[in-house]
Amino acid sequence: MAEQTLNALGANAASQLADVAKTRPQFGAITPRWTARFLEFKGLDAGIYRVNRVVEGDTPLDALCNQEPGQHDLPQGYIEYQAKPREYHLSSISTIVNVDTKVSDVYSSPYDQVGEQIALAIESLQERQESQIINNDDYGLLKNVAESQHIRPHQADGAPTPDDLDELLSKVWKTPSFFLAHPRAIAAFLRECTRRGVPPPTAEIAGGVFTLWRGIPLIPTDKLFVDGLKNPKSQSGKTNILLVRTGETQRGVVGLYQAGLPGEQARGLSVRFRGIDDNGLASYLLSVYCSAAVLADDALAVLEDVEVGEYFAYDRAQK
Image 1: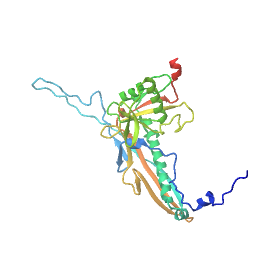
Image 2: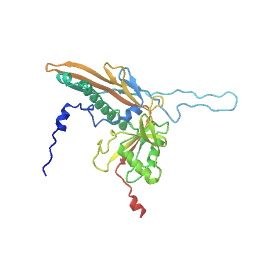
Image 3: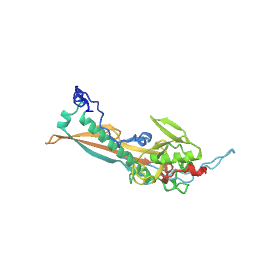
Image 4: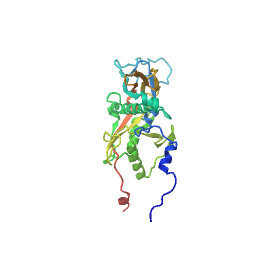
């Protein structure tokens, strides 16, 4: 039987007259960047942050504790400072965005082309900023963990266990703020908790839902790489888990940025118009200035060589 043809306007032709709902450009690499939300930041006036530490012994200064009346010779002394304290200099992350003025003039409804280009560029810079805070060879958190604050998994297979996170808490025991881990490391830890019958609670914090261990949130970030990658393809892989105390008053980890930038669009990030060339290309310079400082050795600890691909065989264990 021959296919019946409708004597009516077709859908393809009719759709040419319809209004099409459109989204803004979607950038799959954008993450929530929880690290920057949970880390305390300090704005700088001149781009330099000097961490003045005290040269400590077992106790900072001798003192007399005595209940008997009478005259006593009180201990005397002073607190010694480091003669050459470390200075952190802000580093810059920059890019240039070019927009054809004809494109922006003609094709900017309903979304402004210049605004969308700049918005996506800002997201890209902030993604790079978070990665640098963790991985930079100078000021990155992973490079600034004191030697005494490194531990390794207790299990031979390298899977992260509750015992390992408890060990981290013993290293950063003065008001720890948050764990920082790749999502696959958090999943590996949750598998070990399930295996032991101790599923950790969750809590809503700063607009997100996070797993808690001993009341401390596990914050996910893909900037703590697995085998050097954000999104590893293999099932197994090695990574690190950090425990951080943040805040200047807590002698913790502090993110740094330049305050009061011309053309400031976000914390420490500026957008400046560079002009239009002879071909009608409008140019914009985007720069973010950032660093991070560890105020005390016990503000940061790391669990190294965590295996993310270990799975417990429940069926074999039950036989």
